[in-house]
Amino acid sequence: MNTIETLLAARRLPALLRFADGRAVTAESFEERRLELVDILCREVYGYAPPAPATVRVTELKCKEKDFAGKGTLRQLQLSFDTDNGEFGFPVTEVIPTGAEKCPVFVFINFRAEVPDRYFPTEEILDAGCAVVRIYYNDVAFDGEDAFKGGIAAMYDRAKYSWGKIRMWAFAMSRVMDYLQTAPYADKSRIAAIGHSRLGKTALLAAATDPRFSLACANCSGCTGDALSRGKVGEHLKEICERFPYWFCENYFKYVEKEEEMPFDQHFLVAAIAPRRVALGAAIEDVWADPNSQYLSACAASAAWELLGEKGFVHPDRLPVPGDRLDAGRLAYHLREGTHFFSRADWHRYLCLI
Image (cartoon, rainbow, N blue to C red; front, side, top):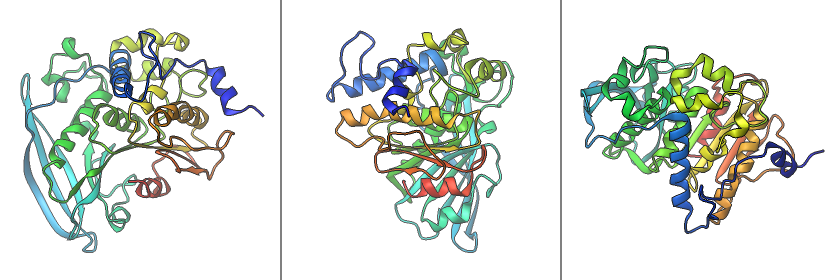
């Protein structure tokens, strides 16, 4: 049986702990390297975002106390801020445990606006003493081809920033974080970015670009998320760039069928969140995402935490099997039975880690 070291060597990954100019990274210089990792990924994959706005304005649209059998308060808010081309805003829904004082918060970007939702077991999250602020991603930028003329894309000069929609959605998560800095119920030291599939990619990028997130939870994020591109099975750059070109900056397309030439791989994205916590979720039947490449990405990224004297990814010297819950370090991974889905079982893993 191949060891993890052998399997990683076969992927021929670019060096994580060496600067682009060849210098070795030390614990003292890791933050410089972390920022370089983020810059590489923005330049080559996701695009650059505009500067954060000076202020985010908050308007309450609706409030219902003692909702969910009295367990929580549901509030609908409008967040708005100034952009290069005027004001932009998007609605969010927050669910707060009744009587909460300094509770952990999930910033959850979702595919639908409903609360609760099949990806959003609201009562169980409240039972765990956690709050959630839900973003409906299409309220920020439409997940489709619109020539970047709608939503937040229309508010900034694309030629200047060249950001794809994953970067736009991540930017919105940071605007929610801006709001949470003023929310009296929020424990500012325990705020997680969380999402599934393409929005799992978004959650990782949000945490990599915004150090205020203490935890990133990426569920089944796969290609261009937590899974290594080199040696991957299932979805490759060719498929994802053909189907969803608007998720990325144009630079990314030059690597289609040339993954071996990339000066990065997705372990860069995971490691760019160190020394904060990361939780990766996978499903055994999610071949498109490739659970083994997700796992090996965690193995490769672990060196960032270890350099800083932390436990990174603590794992056996084998590939994952269903039922694995590996969370002894700052970088966690679980593999469950089933398909590509954001299940209650996944949420329960993340609730244990925030």
